Length: 139
Image: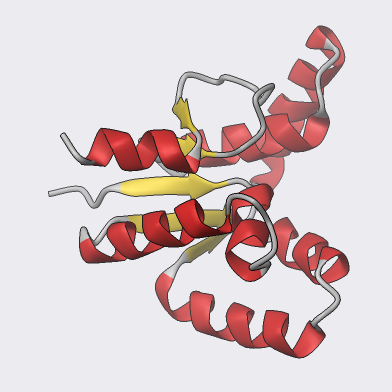
C-alpha cells in the first residue's frame, strides 16, 4: 500500500511557526490531523533557507527543522524538475518558485498541495487551503 502524501507550500510552514498569523490555528489543526491519519508531509529543501530568513527566531526555527527531519520528507527539486519549471515559468510567465513547488509535489507523488496562495500553479495535483483540506478530511 502506498503511503498518502501532502505537500506544504512555504506559507503553510510559516503559519505553523508564527502564532500571530491569521492561519496559524487552522494549519496547526491540519498538522495534528495529518499526523493522526499518518499522512506524510513533504516540503522542498529550499524552504529551509527561506523560512530561516523569514522567521527571526532562529533558535525556534532550527529546533523545528531538527524535528521535522525525523518525520517529514524534505525533497530536493532535482535537475528535471528545475528544467521543467524554468520552461513552464518562461512560457506561461509564472512565478518560478510556485512552479518549482508544484512540480516537486507532483514528482513526490503527493495527493494534494496545501497553500494559502490563491494563484498557485496547477500541475494536476489537487490544491487546497488548510481549511479546505481539513473539510475534505471530515468526509
